[in-house]
Length: 176
Image (cartoon, rainbow, N blue to C red; front, side):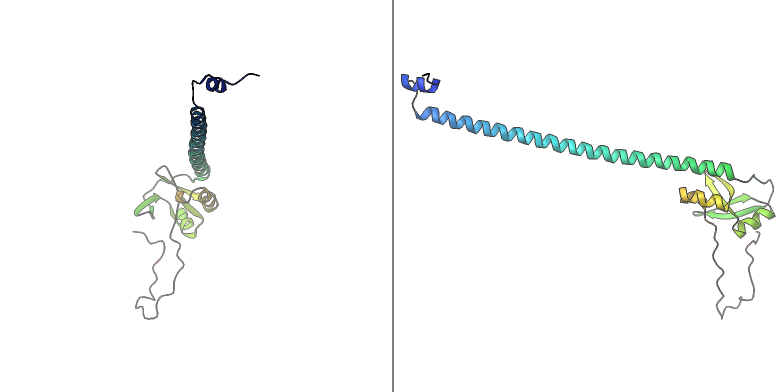
């Protein structure tokens, strides 16, 4: 029968019985500590992988939004280019409000009447303003709200009964 090294050392009297037990406990404790460190490293690595996956997913989502926005803007540009009415040369302008600024676009009497009636709309792209049919304006508005300039088409409200100017009507197409 072969004896283990520990048993042989004890038989020779070179080590005491408590010493091997102590070293065995230390070895088991070291093994437990090493296993705990490995588990912590794995958990930390998994956490880093999860954070990276979350960052990558967010970047992909932002990239997709950006690409979708660019695609919609290309569609808006194409719709405006396809449906815009030819520019009118003349000294008659239609004034409109875009944001906080008053802008103007050259029109003739027929275009002015169609604008006021709502048959035409003003579309904006890359700092230019063009006249487009109302149906095309709705398709443009579906893709980008800001590309269609909202004309004030407020319904006529009845004047107050005590208004001294209620009998005087201001025309919508007043030229300045």
